[in-house]
Image (cartoon, rainbow, N blue to C red; front, side, top):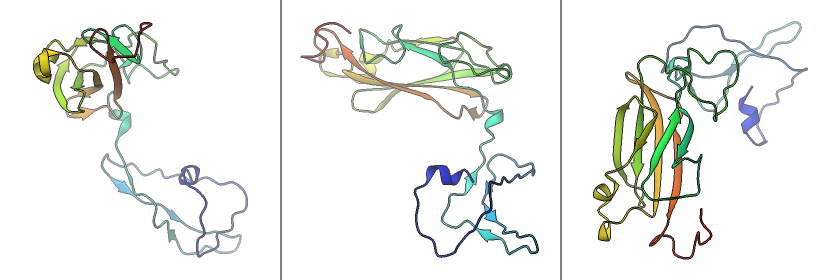
Amino acid sequence: MRKGIHEVGQRHGTWLIGAGPSQGYDRTVRSPATNIGVWIEPHTVTDVGAKVAVTGGPTLSLAGRQGLPFPPGNVRINGTAYPAAIVGPVSLAWSHRDRTQQTAYLVAQTDGDIGPEPGVTYRVRYYGEAGTLLRTRTGVTATTDGWPEEAADSALPGGRLNGHLTVEIDAQRGALDSLHRHRIEVERAGYGYQYGNYYGGI
């Protein structure tokens, strides 16, 4: 059971004796949002015991991930992948991904465009230095975006930009969201920001 890979050892009240590796399969066709649990049915050469529910373990809620759009790849902020800091306004770029075409090999994050899958758009969220969501952009079909409204959205003293900001990017197709999203936090360097840091540049 995969559950054992993520758990630490602990004492239980009932012995479970296994004889070698074994696997279990469930060929039932299930719909997304279905909740399923796990039971163990002990077998010997001569007898079959009663099913035992795996209590205390999580119930698995099926997300239907095979039908969800893939998040974008190759995300860059101001031309760099996952930078520690940026100077000036924030500029985003990424590459399309397509679940219907990515079937032959593992695609690297740094690979260029694949697709896009028909009907997929992107959602970009911008958070200010206090961690507050300040701007959400949906329906983006391009592979670039920016935050020209940052100063107005943030309303910081003197009209300055955020000294620390967070960006999230995911994909949407109709009512479906990608299972994962990019979440990138960066500092802002340059005159008036992060005094004492980045004297040698970023």
